[in-house]
Length: 269
Ligand code: 3PY
Image (cartoon, rainbow, N blue to C red; front, side, top):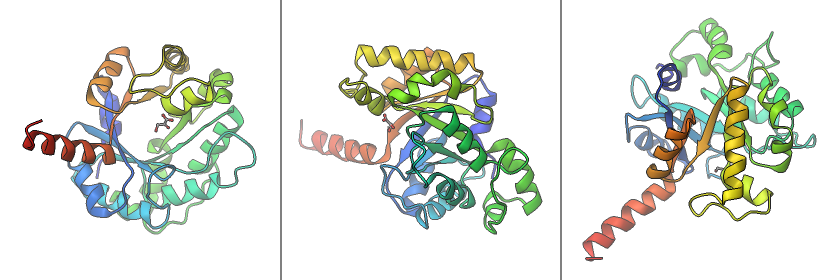
């Protein structure tokens, strides 16, 4: 299968994504096949219900097999990137990528040192220190082992989330770390970490200033900026502001909203 996100990023259109929080192969395939406008999916192992092992592998398999050019699967690992005490980073990135994911996203990244550690775990030598051992990744990508080894370092997406005070304080340094592809804005944690109310659904004006600053600094550093939205209208507005990638919706909310609105129509409301 080809890597749909990379194809979209070569065009001028923003790459639209969606959030997968619910486990199960059929569920993942259903989401992946929902729209040809989907370029990527976050498989959420931080706040979602998908386990790193074996949940991620069945979810990635289902997405990769959903079409000849499926949306790219990016795994959000549970470990955060703020402090030096979180020992989960290395093995969690390994599980996600060895399951065949096309990228990883690390929550709460607070320093350039953490960002460099993330790059080292996600990329093979000479760039990083990722170990080469999974017997599954080449088959999932439809390539041989040597092709996987060569193409992984070029194409694996490494995204870090800016959603904390530490992340804002060290923003320029984090954005300049080589090997990071994108900075992802988490408007909910960004707001509450700054003592601001969470978006409802739009962010507080003070949070909005932080969001626009992240976009500007990220672009200045030559990196992609990803924005998290919860509906299509919000996402269309963010696309006009110049975000490169935009999350449009969360699977669980889409399910609930879809059932709810049909029932309301049927009940005459
Ligand atoms: C946030 O807004 O905090 C996120 O991480 C998006 O889910």
